[in-house]
Image 1 (cartoon, rainbow, N blue to C red):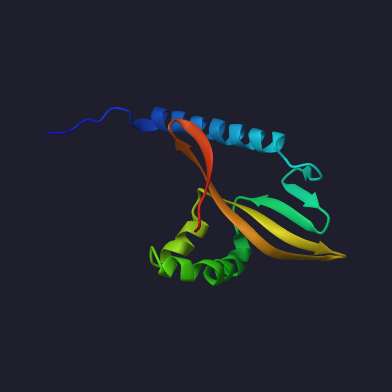
Image 2: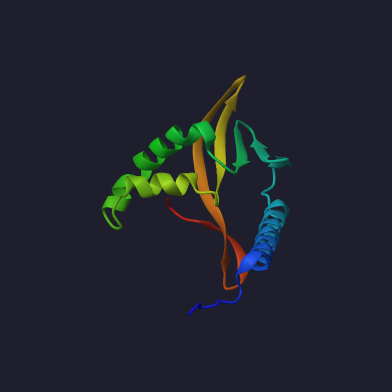
Length: 135
């Protein structure tokens, strides 16, 4: 006997995708409205003095740098409580749902990454939120 589960199929996937896109737009609009004074937004970049923040969907070739920084800053904290799982941490950094804010130190023609924030767009209690957790 086949068991039929309603709510599946192409239409529900399309509806979830549309909702996800609406959620992301709401979060990004709120983000743009709430920038601190002295910071200018230029497309996906924020600039203030010698620090530049850039929004990125992937880490690309910065993955080794980001993982090294994550491990150096967070490994001992994780080992003392939840446990450190290297494979899981790498998977979280390359997840298709992962988003990043990368901070660069900019001076003269030099642009060096100095920090990053890893976040994801999620639904909590039917509200779109940007979830930022220690990865």
